[in-house]
Length: 395
Image 1 (cartoon, rainbow, N blue to C red):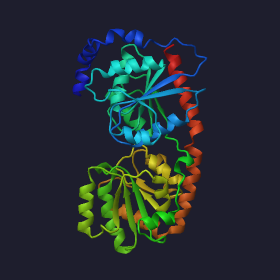
Image 2 (image 1 turned 60 degrees about the vertical axis):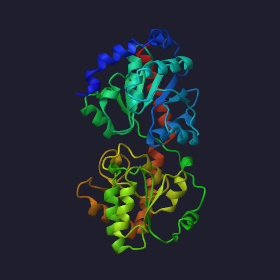
Image 3 (image 1 turned 135 degrees about the vertical axis):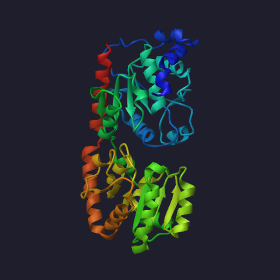
Image 4 (image 1 turned 60 degrees about the horizontal axis):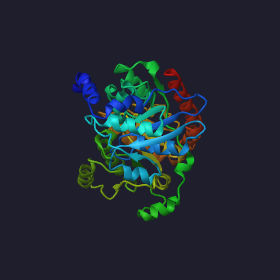
Protein backbone atom coordinates (compact mmCIF):
# COMPACT_ATOMS: atom_id res chain seq x y z
CA UNK A 1 0.00 0.00 0.00
CA UNK A 2 1.23 3.49 -0.87
CA UNK A 3 2.33 5.76 1.93
CA UNK A 4 -0.11 8.31 0.55
CA UNK A 5 -2.96 5.80 0.93
CA UNK A 6 -1.87 5.01 4.47
CA UNK A 7 -1.65 8.68 5.41
CA UNK A 8 -4.93 9.83 3.83
CA UNK A 9 -6.62 10.43 7.22
CA UNK A 10 -3.59 12.38 8.39
CA UNK A 11 -3.64 14.47 5.19
CA UNK A 12 -7.34 15.20 5.67
CA UNK A 13 -6.71 16.22 9.26
CA UNK A 14 -3.80 18.42 8.28
CA UNK A 15 -5.80 20.10 5.53
CA UNK A 16 -8.73 20.69 7.84
CA UNK A 17 -6.45 22.25 10.44
CA UNK A 18 -4.93 24.87 8.15
CA UNK A 19 -5.85 28.41 9.07
CA UNK A 20 -7.51 28.94 5.70
CA UNK A 21 -9.95 26.07 5.67
CA UNK A 22 -12.78 27.30 7.91
CA UNK A 23 -13.84 29.49 4.99
CA UNK A 24 -13.79 26.61 2.50
CA UNK A 25 -17.43 25.62 2.76
CA UNK A 26 -18.61 29.11 1.92
CA UNK A 27 -15.68 29.71 -0.43
CA UNK A 28 -16.73 26.84 -2.67
CA UNK A 29 -20.38 26.08 -1.96
CA UNK A 30 -22.06 23.05 -3.42
CA UNK A 31 -23.70 23.82 -6.74
CA UNK A 32 -27.13 25.39 -6.47
CA UNK A 33 -27.13 27.57 -9.58
CA UNK A 34 -29.69 27.31 -12.33
CA UNK A 35 -29.20 24.52 -14.85
CA UNK A 36 -30.34 26.92 -17.58
CA UNK A 37 -26.85 28.39 -17.97
CA UNK A 38 -23.66 26.82 -19.25
CA UNK A 39 -21.51 25.18 -16.55
CA UNK A 40 -18.53 27.13 -15.32
CA UNK A 41 -15.50 24.84 -15.38
CA UNK A 42 -12.21 25.56 -13.63
CA UNK A 43 -9.37 23.60 -15.22
CA UNK A 44 -6.39 22.84 -12.97
CA UNK A 45 -3.08 21.60 -14.35
CA UNK A 46 0.27 20.89 -12.71
CA UNK A 47 2.72 20.59 -15.63
CA UNK A 48 6.41 19.78 -15.68
CA UNK A 49 6.94 20.26 -19.42
CA UNK A 50 4.97 20.97 -22.58
CA UNK A 51 3.60 17.56 -23.57
CA UNK A 52 0.33 15.96 -24.64
CA UNK A 53 -1.85 17.08 -21.73
CA UNK A 54 -0.65 20.67 -21.94
CA UNK A 55 -1.07 20.77 -25.72
CA UNK A 56 -4.57 19.31 -25.50
CA UNK A 57 -5.67 21.77 -22.82
CA UNK A 58 -4.32 24.78 -24.69
CA UNK A 59 -6.35 23.76 -27.72
CA UNK A 60 -9.46 23.00 -25.68
CA UNK A 61 -9.47 26.41 -24.02
CA UNK A 62 -9.26 28.13 -27.41
CA UNK A 63 -12.15 26.17 -28.88
CA UNK A 64 -14.81 25.79 -26.21
CA UNK A 65 -17.98 27.70 -26.96
CA UNK A 66 -19.24 29.92 -24.10
CA UNK A 67 -22.85 28.89 -24.70
CA UNK A 68 -21.81 25.29 -23.94
CA UNK A 69 -19.10 25.75 -21.28
CA UNK A 70 -17.40 28.73 -19.61
CA UNK A 71 -13.77 27.81 -18.94
CA UNK A 72 -10.99 29.20 -16.79
CA UNK A 73 -7.61 27.66 -15.99
CA UNK A 74 -5.12 27.65 -13.13
CA UNK A 75 -1.62 26.19 -13.31
CA UNK A 76 1.05 25.46 -10.76
CA UNK A 77 4.25 27.44 -10.92
CA UNK A 78 6.26 25.58 -13.54
CA UNK A 79 8.92 26.09 -16.17
CA UNK A 80 6.35 24.73 -18.62
CA UNK A 81 4.23 27.86 -18.17
CA UNK A 82 6.31 29.76 -20.70
CA UNK A 83 5.59 27.18 -23.38
CA UNK A 84 1.89 27.19 -22.50
CA UNK A 85 1.81 30.96 -22.89
CA UNK A 86 3.58 30.57 -26.23
CA UNK A 87 0.73 28.24 -27.21
CA UNK A 88 -1.75 31.07 -26.46
CA UNK A 89 -3.08 29.32 -23.36
CA UNK A 90 -4.46 31.73 -20.73
CA UNK A 91 -4.18 30.74 -17.07
CA UNK A 92 -3.59 32.01 -13.54
CA UNK A 93 -0.50 30.84 -11.68
CA UNK A 94 -1.22 29.55 -8.18
CA UNK A 95 0.81 27.37 -5.83
CA UNK A 96 -0.89 23.97 -6.23
CA UNK A 97 2.13 21.90 -7.24
CA UNK A 98 3.40 18.99 -5.18
CA UNK A 99 1.44 16.25 -3.45
CA UNK A 100 2.60 17.32 0.01
CA UNK A 101 1.53 20.94 -0.48
CA UNK A 102 -1.23 21.29 2.13
CA UNK A 103 -2.01 24.86 1.06
CA UNK A 104 -2.93 23.66 -2.42
CA UNK A 105 -6.54 22.87 -1.42
CA UNK A 106 -7.07 26.34 0.03
CA UNK A 107 -5.54 28.04 -3.01
CA UNK A 108 -7.60 25.91 -5.36
CA UNK A 109 -10.73 26.61 -3.33
CA UNK A 110 -10.12 30.36 -3.48
CA UNK A 111 -9.68 30.15 -7.26
CA UNK A 112 -12.91 28.17 -7.56
CA UNK A 113 -14.71 30.81 -5.51
CA UNK A 114 -13.37 33.69 -7.60
CA UNK A 115 -14.52 31.96 -10.77
CA UNK A 116 -17.82 30.68 -9.26
CA UNK A 117 -16.89 27.25 -10.53
CA UNK A 118 -19.53 24.56 -10.90
CA UNK A 119 -17.01 21.85 -11.82
CA UNK A 120 -13.27 21.29 -11.46
CA UNK A 121 -11.53 19.60 -14.39
CA UNK A 122 -8.07 18.37 -13.42
CA UNK A 123 -5.14 17.52 -15.66
CA UNK A 124 -2.13 15.53 -14.37
CA UNK A 125 -1.74 13.78 -11.06
CA UNK A 126 -1.08 16.55 -8.53
CA UNK A 127 -3.95 18.66 -9.83
CA UNK A 128 -6.25 15.62 -9.67
CA UNK A 129 -5.06 14.79 -6.14
CA UNK A 130 -5.96 18.25 -4.85
CA UNK A 131 -9.20 18.59 -6.83
CA UNK A 132 -10.33 15.29 -5.31
CA UNK A 133 -9.56 16.52 -1.79
CA UNK A 134 -11.36 19.81 -2.45
CA UNK A 135 -14.42 17.89 -3.63
CA UNK A 136 -14.30 15.64 -0.54
CA UNK A 137 -14.18 18.70 1.71
CA UNK A 138 -17.31 20.26 0.21
CA UNK A 139 -16.07 21.85 -2.98
CA UNK A 140 -17.41 21.41 -6.51
CA UNK A 141 -17.45 17.97 -8.13
CA UNK A 142 -14.32 17.21 -10.06
CA UNK A 143 -13.63 15.48 -13.37
CA UNK A 144 -10.16 13.96 -13.57
CA UNK A 145 -8.65 13.83 -17.03
CA UNK A 146 -6.30 10.85 -17.11
CA UNK A 147 -3.73 11.55 -19.81
CA UNK A 148 -1.49 8.55 -19.13
CA UNK A 149 -0.90 5.35 -17.24
CA UNK A 150 -0.82 6.57 -13.66
CA UNK A 151 -1.72 5.55 -10.14
CA UNK A 152 -5.40 5.40 -9.31
CA UNK A 153 -4.62 6.98 -5.93
CA UNK A 154 -4.72 10.46 -7.40
CA UNK A 155 -8.30 10.04 -8.67
CA UNK A 156 -10.19 8.05 -6.04
CA UNK A 157 -12.00 11.11 -4.62
CA UNK A 158 -13.17 12.49 -7.97
CA UNK A 159 -16.72 12.26 -9.30
CA UNK A 160 -15.82 11.08 -12.78
CA UNK A 161 -12.78 10.35 -14.92
CA UNK A 162 -12.00 10.91 -18.59
CA UNK A 163 -9.54 8.42 -20.05
CA UNK A 164 -7.66 9.45 -23.19
CA UNK A 165 -7.90 5.89 -24.55
CA UNK A 166 -9.57 2.55 -23.91
CA UNK A 167 -6.16 1.25 -22.87
CA UNK A 168 -5.96 3.86 -20.10
CA UNK A 169 -9.51 3.02 -18.95
CA UNK A 170 -8.63 -0.67 -18.79
CA UNK A 171 -5.55 0.17 -16.72
CA UNK A 172 -7.64 2.22 -14.26
CA UNK A 173 -10.21 -0.55 -13.90
CA UNK A 174 -7.42 -3.03 -13.16
CA UNK A 175 -6.30 -0.64 -10.41
CA UNK A 176 -9.71 -0.62 -8.78
CA UNK A 177 -11.64 2.28 -10.36
CA UNK A 178 -15.21 1.40 -11.33
CA UNK A 179 -15.66 1.31 -15.09
CA UNK A 180 -18.99 3.17 -15.05
CA UNK A 181 -17.16 6.17 -13.61
CA UNK A 182 -14.78 6.43 -16.58
CA UNK A 183 -15.51 7.84 -20.03
CA UNK A 184 -13.11 7.26 -22.93
CA UNK A 185 -12.56 10.36 -25.04
CA UNK A 186 -9.80 10.30 -27.65
CA UNK A 187 -7.96 13.58 -28.16
CA UNK A 188 -9.34 15.64 -31.06
CA UNK A 189 -7.12 17.44 -33.54
CA UNK A 190 -7.91 20.34 -35.88
CA UNK A 191 -6.18 20.30 -39.29
CA UNK A 192 -5.70 24.06 -38.90
CA UNK A 193 -3.37 23.39 -35.97
CA UNK A 194 -1.19 21.40 -38.36
CA UNK A 195 -1.05 23.96 -41.15
CA UNK A 196 2.58 24.36 -42.32
CA UNK A 197 4.13 27.73 -43.06
CA UNK A 198 7.01 26.44 -45.21
CA UNK A 199 7.33 23.90 -47.98
CA UNK A 200 9.00 20.52 -47.37
CA UNK A 201 11.73 21.57 -49.79
CA UNK A 202 12.47 24.70 -47.74
CA UNK A 203 12.64 22.71 -44.49
CA UNK A 204 14.91 20.09 -45.98
CA UNK A 205 17.17 22.74 -47.47
CA UNK A 206 17.44 24.34 -44.04
CA UNK A 207 18.57 21.00 -42.64
CA UNK A 208 20.91 20.33 -45.55
CA UNK A 209 18.96 17.39 -46.97
CA UNK A 210 17.77 16.93 -50.53
CA UNK A 211 14.11 16.57 -51.40
CA UNK A 212 14.59 12.95 -52.50
CA UNK A 213 16.34 11.69 -49.36
CA UNK A 214 14.19 9.28 -47.29
CA UNK A 215 13.54 10.87 -43.89
CA UNK A 216 12.08 9.26 -40.76
CA UNK A 217 10.86 11.69 -38.09
CA UNK A 218 10.27 11.21 -34.36
CA UNK A 219 8.56 13.77 -32.15
CA UNK A 220 8.72 13.03 -28.42
CA UNK A 221 10.45 13.60 -25.12
CA UNK A 222 13.87 11.94 -25.12
CA UNK A 223 13.15 9.31 -22.48
CA UNK A 224 13.59 5.57 -22.21
CA UNK A 225 9.89 4.72 -22.44
CA UNK A 226 9.57 6.45 -25.81
CA UNK A 227 11.62 3.69 -27.44
CA UNK A 228 14.66 5.71 -28.51
CA UNK A 229 17.15 2.99 -27.61
CA UNK A 230 15.38 0.59 -29.93
CA UNK A 231 14.97 3.29 -32.58
CA UNK A 232 18.66 4.13 -32.81
CA UNK A 233 19.60 0.46 -33.13
CA UNK A 234 16.94 -0.03 -35.81
CA UNK A 235 18.19 3.09 -37.61
CA UNK A 236 21.68 1.59 -37.71
CA UNK A 237 20.29 -1.55 -39.40
CA UNK A 238 18.25 0.46 -41.92
CA UNK A 239 21.22 2.66 -42.81
CA UNK A 240 23.26 -0.38 -43.79
CA UNK A 241 20.88 -0.83 -46.73
CA UNK A 242 19.67 2.75 -47.22
CA UNK A 243 22.76 4.86 -46.41
CA UNK A 244 21.16 8.07 -47.72
CA UNK A 245 18.27 7.88 -45.27
CA UNK A 246 17.95 10.40 -42.44
CA UNK A 247 16.50 10.04 -38.94
CA UNK A 248 15.35 13.29 -37.34
CA UNK A 249 14.46 13.36 -33.63
CA UNK A 250 12.63 16.40 -32.26
CA UNK A 251 12.45 16.80 -28.50
CA UNK A 252 14.64 17.09 -25.43
CA UNK A 253 15.10 14.92 -22.39
CA UNK A 254 17.47 12.94 -20.18
CA UNK A 255 18.36 10.38 -22.84
CA UNK A 256 19.97 12.92 -25.17
CA UNK A 257 23.63 12.49 -24.08
CA UNK A 258 23.34 8.71 -24.36
CA UNK A 259 21.75 8.91 -27.83
CA UNK A 260 24.43 11.31 -29.05
CA UNK A 261 27.16 9.00 -27.82
CA UNK A 262 25.53 5.91 -29.31
CA UNK A 263 25.12 7.64 -32.67
CA UNK A 264 28.82 8.49 -32.68
CA UNK A 265 29.82 4.96 -31.69
CA UNK A 266 27.66 3.46 -34.44
CA UNK A 267 29.01 5.93 -36.98
CA UNK A 268 25.59 7.38 -37.84
CA UNK A 269 25.74 10.77 -36.09
CA UNK A 270 25.54 12.50 -39.47
CA UNK A 271 22.26 10.71 -40.25
CA UNK A 272 20.66 10.20 -36.82
CA UNK A 273 20.15 13.78 -35.70
CA UNK A 274 18.79 15.24 -32.48
CA UNK A 275 17.33 18.66 -33.19
CA UNK A 276 15.91 19.46 -29.73
CA UNK A 277 12.52 20.94 -28.88
CA UNK A 278 10.82 22.74 -31.77
CA UNK A 279 7.58 24.69 -32.11
CA UNK A 280 7.35 24.38 -35.93
CA UNK A 281 6.09 20.79 -35.82
CA UNK A 282 3.63 21.15 -38.75
CA UNK A 283 6.48 22.26 -41.04
CA UNK A 284 8.72 19.45 -39.86
CA UNK A 285 6.00 16.81 -40.09
CA UNK A 286 5.35 17.69 -43.72
CA UNK A 287 9.05 17.41 -44.54
CA UNK A 288 9.45 13.78 -43.41
CA UNK A 289 8.18 10.63 -45.13
CA UNK A 290 7.50 8.35 -42.16
CA UNK A 291 6.67 9.17 -38.54
CA UNK A 292 8.10 6.57 -36.18
CA UNK A 293 7.54 6.62 -32.42
CA UNK A 294 8.07 3.14 -30.92
CA UNK A 295 6.95 4.02 -27.39
CA UNK A 296 6.79 0.99 -25.16
CA UNK A 297 3.19 1.77 -24.19
CA UNK A 298 1.85 5.12 -25.33
CA UNK A 299 -1.36 6.10 -23.47
CA UNK A 300 -2.81 7.65 -26.63
CA UNK A 301 -0.23 9.26 -28.87
CA UNK A 302 -1.44 12.69 -29.99
CA UNK A 303 1.50 12.85 -32.38
CA UNK A 304 0.18 9.78 -34.20
CA UNK A 305 -2.98 11.71 -35.10
CA UNK A 306 -0.95 14.80 -36.02
CA UNK A 307 1.16 12.67 -38.35
CA UNK A 308 -1.96 11.22 -39.95
CA UNK A 309 -3.31 14.72 -40.61
CA UNK A 310 -0.02 15.47 -42.35
CA UNK A 311 -0.59 12.36 -44.51
CA UNK A 312 2.34 10.49 -42.99
CA UNK A 313 2.25 6.75 -42.29
CA UNK A 314 3.02 5.88 -38.67
CA UNK A 315 5.13 3.15 -37.10
CA UNK A 316 4.36 2.37 -33.44
CA UNK A 317 4.37 -0.45 -30.92
CA UNK A 318 1.24 -2.57 -30.73
CA UNK A 319 0.59 -1.52 -27.14
CA UNK A 320 -1.31 1.09 -25.16
CA UNK A 321 -3.50 3.42 -27.17
CA UNK A 322 -1.60 3.16 -30.48
CA UNK A 323 -3.84 0.38 -31.92
CA UNK A 324 -6.84 2.65 -31.32
CA UNK A 325 -5.36 5.16 -33.77
CA UNK A 326 -3.29 3.19 -36.29
CA UNK A 327 -4.83 0.58 -38.57
CA UNK A 328 -2.05 -1.93 -39.14
CA UNK A 329 -1.20 -2.32 -42.82
CA UNK A 330 -3.61 0.47 -43.77
CA UNK A 331 -2.49 3.72 -42.11
CA UNK A 332 0.80 2.49 -40.66
CA UNK A 333 2.59 -0.49 -39.17
CA UNK A 334 2.40 -1.85 -35.63
CA UNK A 335 5.33 -3.80 -34.22
CA UNK A 336 5.69 -5.83 -31.01
CA UNK A 337 6.69 -3.89 -27.90
CA UNK A 338 10.13 -4.58 -26.42
CA UNK A 339 12.05 -6.68 -25.72
CA UNK A 340 13.28 -8.19 -28.99
CA UNK A 341 11.66 -5.64 -31.27
CA UNK A 342 14.66 -3.92 -32.87
CA UNK A 343 14.61 -6.13 -35.97
CA UNK A 344 10.81 -5.83 -36.49
CA UNK A 345 11.19 -2.06 -36.08
CA UNK A 346 13.97 -1.91 -38.65
CA UNK A 347 11.92 -4.08 -41.02
CA UNK A 348 8.90 -1.78 -40.68
CA UNK A 349 10.99 1.34 -41.36
CA UNK A 350 12.69 -0.27 -44.35
CA UNK A 351 9.34 -1.48 -45.73
CA UNK A 352 7.87 2.03 -45.82
CA UNK A 353 11.03 3.75 -47.05
CA UNK A 354 11.50 1.16 -49.77
CA UNK A 355 7.85 1.35 -50.90
CA UNK A 356 7.15 5.04 -51.12
CA UNK A 357 3.93 4.69 -53.10
CA UNK A 358 2.53 2.36 -50.44
CA UNK A 359 3.66 4.72 -47.68
CA UNK A 360 2.01 7.68 -49.40
CA UNK A 361 -1.25 5.74 -49.78
CA UNK A 362 -1.18 4.87 -46.08
CA UNK A 363 -0.68 8.54 -45.28
CA UNK A 364 -3.66 9.62 -47.35
CA UNK A 365 -5.93 7.04 -45.74
CA UNK A 366 -4.63 8.01 -42.32
CA UNK A 367 -5.69 11.61 -42.90
CA UNK A 368 -9.17 10.55 -44.02
CA UNK A 369 -9.63 8.45 -40.90
CA UNK A 370 -8.26 11.13 -38.60
CA UNK A 371 -10.61 13.77 -39.99
CA UNK A 372 -13.53 11.42 -39.44
CA UNK A 373 -12.62 10.10 -35.99
CA UNK A 374 -10.83 12.91 -34.16
CA UNK A 375 -12.85 16.06 -34.89
CA UNK A 376 -13.33 18.85 -32.35
CA UNK A 377 -17.10 19.55 -32.75
CA UNK A 378 -18.13 16.04 -31.70
CA UNK A 379 -15.62 16.07 -28.84
CA UNK A 380 -16.84 19.40 -27.46
CA UNK A 381 -20.47 18.24 -27.58
CA UNK A 382 -19.61 15.05 -25.65
CA UNK A 383 -17.59 16.99 -23.11
CA UNK A 384 -20.38 19.52 -22.52
CA UNK A 385 -22.83 16.65 -22.02
CA UNK A 386 -20.47 15.02 -19.52
CA UNK A 387 -20.19 18.25 -17.55
CA UNK A 388 -23.98 18.53 -17.41
CA UNK A 389 -24.31 14.95 -16.16
CA UNK A 390 -21.72 15.52 -13.45
CA UNK A 391 -23.35 18.78 -12.42
CA UNK A 392 -26.83 17.25 -12.35
CA UNK A 393 -25.61 14.31 -10.28
CA UNK A 394 -24.78 16.57 -7.33
CA UNK A 395 -27.74 18.94 -7.72
